[in-house]
Image (cartoon, rainbow, N blue to C red; front, side, top):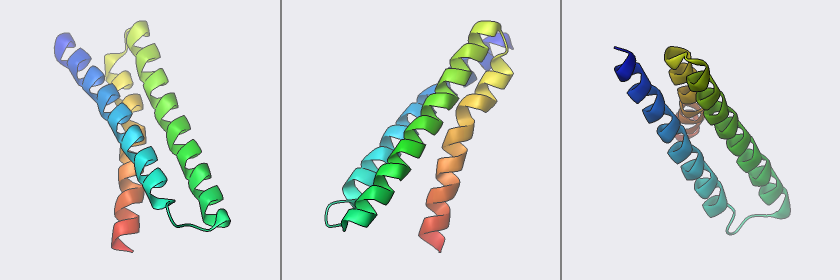
Length: 93
């Protein structure tokens, strides 16, 4: 059971890294024909996505080192869930 939690935590960390990179690339692609105000807003979105992803991955790794694989999974996947929710809300609305 402990091995399964460890694999899940590592998968959550990898998922958050990929999601963060994808969100930053989407922001970069969205700024091609933008005004300076929109580019500034996109830079702030990129900063927020990067910091959120880095904090989630860092917390996940730290919690793995401490020995809490279950909490590491939750901490690592939280930024992915937040970014996914933001993406879905922008696509729907």
